[in-house]
Structure formats: structure tokens, C-alpha cells
Length: 352
Picture 1 (cartoon, rainbow, N blue to C red):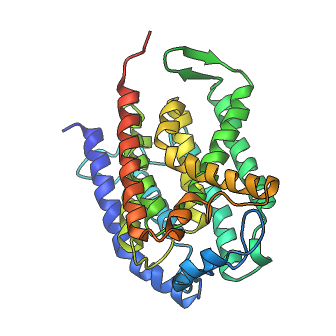
Picture 2 (picture 1 turned 90 degrees about the vertical axis):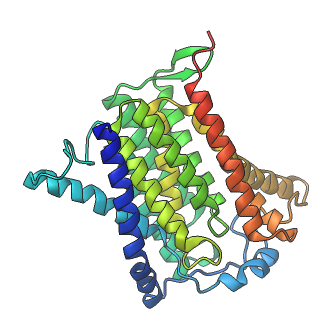
């Protein structure tokens, strides 16, 4: 077996069991600290009352929130472990070669993961402590933070790594110069927000993201970015363990900490591998979710009427009395088809 594949598989297995071991204690810690989910009564987007939403989700109040912190901890443990073993030069039963803290491959995705994750964690904390009113961290403050972090990543891509072009299938490489920075900011912030909006039902976002990161583990491996591929597997394995405790009835919730970080991290993976078209394909569920919110807000402002019973769309289906687990499983199936389509598209030869 190829040494790189062996290392990636070992890291995935070890990560899953590390996450499974620490998660029960992490949930108990959240319970002791009383970091529990609060079900809002005011609409977080567009104003007004969230009466239907509150009625559908009131039974979830009190369930521990900020579950994404567990995944951040597990990723930090795995990265730190590689640094430790490499530093002491202790031989393992396979050659470690490099740590997972690597300037060329992992700095940017880890920066996106932790910077946006910490921003989300602050919002989660304001939520559970009921600080800041109905919106907790205002949308403007959150967007400002996301934009600043996205700009830092975009600038690194452009100034340090020399990225200034994108590949369009059937067209080829297009040089866009400084516009690459603006495009990168747009992609990173859009992915972070759309994944966060999709995270609204037990296991929904976690299952979709696990599929996405397993796909990018293959893509990055195929691009000879073996450390980045390992990071993708570590994240996907952490998500698999998270889902063990998050599928209905969820024992804890993801929270903004992981949704923002993972969405932004996924965008960074696409930028590093020049696969933005693949990202769009596999993200169609997230895209539709955020479009449904835009449609709802626009309709309420211009027409004074709602298009959906509740936005985003998964809550609309829930309000129409579709079972939560049915919505989640169908979205997972759609996500699997999209991931397969993205993989096929990635493997296709140039059209001309």
C-alpha cells in the first residue's frame, strides 16, 4: 500500500476514535456550564415573529450547543500530535515525513477553520447566555469578521502563493489579476454563511459536510497535496463521530463555531485545488438554502408576503409536517448525488 494512503487511513481511524472517546465528556462539560440552545421567538432574518419556528423546535431547548468546539479540539489534537512526534523524532510504525502544520498546504485551511470557528463560537456564547438581544451577534458584526478573515486568506493566495487565475472547464485558464482577491472573499464568506444557514436540523449540515470533505480528500490526494488530504480526512472523521451523537434525537448541536469554520474551510480547499466549479456543484443544497432566505426576505420587503412558511427551505418542509429525519435523509441523498456528480466532473478530460 502507498505510504501516503496508509498515513491518511491511519489518521482517519485514529481521529474517529479520539473524537468518540472525548465527545461524551465534552457534552457533559457543556451541560455543567449550562451552554444550552435557546429557541428564538423573533425572526433572525427579515424581522417579525418566529412563531412557527418556535413551535416546531421548542422541544430542543436546553440541548447543549457549541458542539462544533469538540471538532475544533479534535483537529487541534491531531495536528499537535504530529508536531510532537516529529519534534522528538520518535519513529512510528510508518514514516511521518511531515507534520500537519505545513506552510504550503495546511496553514490556510486551518486558519479558515479556526478563525471563523472562533468567531462562530463567540456568537454561540452570546446566544446561550442571551447576550445582545434577539440577534446576539449582529449580522453586520459577523459579516465584518468573516470578510476580514476572508480577506486575509485571499491576500495570502494572491500575494504569497501567486494565485491570480481560475480554470473554467471548456474554456481553460483565465487570468483575473486582483479580481482573484475579490472572488476569493466572495466564495469564502458565501460558503461560511450558506453552511451556517443549512445547519438547522439534527444531522443535516454534518452529514452533507462529511461527504464534501471526503470528496476533497480524494481531490487533494489526486493533486499530490497529501497533507491537505489528511486534514480533509481528519475533519471528515471528526464529523462522522459528531454525527454519532448529533443524529435525531441530537445530544448536542453544531452551532456557528463549526458551521462557519467548515464552510470557509471547504471554500479554501476549492481555491487551493482550483476546483471552484466542482465546489458549486457539490454545494447546490447550501446554495438553494441561502437563496430561499434571500427570496423570503425580498418578498416580505417588496410584497409584504412570504413565499415559504419558514425560511430556509428545510424549515419550510418541516412546517409542512414532513418528518425531520425524512428531510435530513433526502438532503443527504441529494448531497451524495451532487458529490458523485462533482467527482465525475473533476475526472472529466478537458472539453476542448
